[in-house]
Length: 196
Image (tube, rainbow, N blue to C red; front, side, top):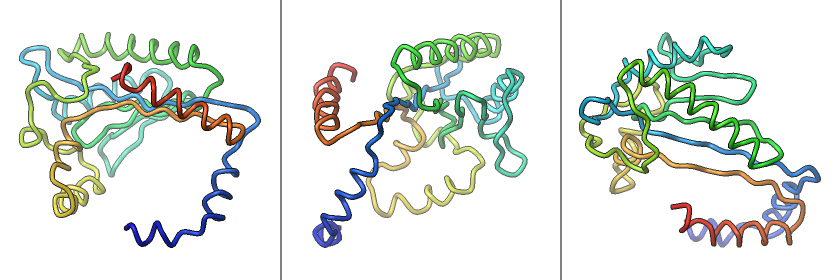
C-alpha cells in the first residue's frame, strides 16, 4: 500500500484536488442512527425495519430494493438507506447552509420518531449498539454485505462490529481554493473532539 502511495504522481493528486474547487459552496451530510426495540433496547431485526421503511415510503418517496427486499428510499431531498445491521442512514443532497441541513434532519427525526414510537422502536444517536453485539445482528438482504461479511474478517480485526453495531455522521464540505480547504480542514479537526 505504501509503495502504491509513493508511486502516485503528485501532479495527478494536485489536479484531482483542484478539479474539486467550486465557486458555489455546498455542504452535505450522511446521518446514521441505530434502531432498538423499546422493550429491552436490543437491535431491531431487518423484518421490522423494513416495515418502518414501507411506512416512510408513504411520505412521497420511492423505494430502493435488493431483489424484492426494500433496503432504502429515495426522495427529492436525498436517500434513506439501510446499513448492514439495519442502521438508518439519511444522505441529504448538498445544500447551501448548516441551517438548512438542520431543518431537514429535524423533519426526518420527527417523522421517524413518530413512526418508530407507534412501532415500538427507539432511535439512538450513539455510535454503537448499547446491548446487541454483531453476533446477535443479522445483515440485511443485500448481496454486497454478504460478500463483505465473508471477505473483511480476513483483512481486519473487527469488521463485523463496524458493519453491524455502529453508526456515525459524515460531512462533505465544498471548497473554493487551497486556502479555503486548509481553513475548513483545520476547523473540522478542532471541532471533531467536541462533536464526538
